[in-house]
Image (cartoon, rainbow, N blue to C red):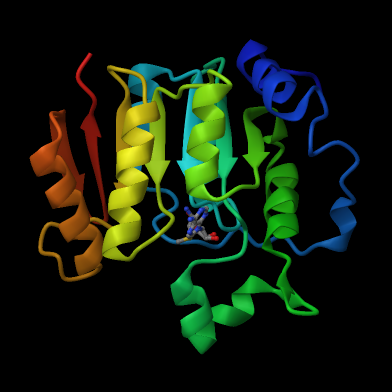
Length: 227
Ligand SMILES: C[S@@+](CC[C@H](N)C(=O)[O-])C[C@H]1O[C@@H](n2cnc3c(N)ncnc32)[C@H](O)[C@@H]1O
């Protein structure tokens, strides 16, 4: 597939030294299954259309549901942009605790194979020129993105769901987000009933950090880093 623009090429060159991780992937080996949570939320498309971000980071990718939404909107708005998809693809604690969720990790000899499902889903959607995987934990990925000067204009946070983990993700990615950039957080609800730990962490973070344009619709919130 032809490269659609310079943002994708630049990220491949910088992050993967020119080697696209999607190149040569054996698509026929994996089942197409882009299931996720809140993956088509309207904030994802709205913010892409509004700020036309060249670099987007998603922290917490799973099988790629919301990554694909961001990528689809980049494509539809003809934005020269890319989603850096950050995940260990090893699941969150809740996927290991809850037996009904843990089968979704697709373990093979004790090691989750989620990453390959994600790659396949992106390829089936034909959006690999808008997505670059970064198979790292959130803390290391934030350092890499900052040191390689790939600062995003949009960050979507959907990784840890425990209080400390959410605060840590917000803090490290807020520091990396460009001034004027937008942060979107998943599983935020104003009543704190759905994911109370996430809601409390977001509220506490916002109380301590200057921001503008806060808005929330079940089950995500968004806010802007002052320019
Ligand atoms: C709720 S799922 C993401 C759902 C996805 N955004 C969607 O639309 O379907 C959470 C993901 O966060 C990842 N994750 C959890 N903690 C992480 C961490 N510290 N660093 C990187 N990824 C993490 C898990 O592996 C899992 O894939």
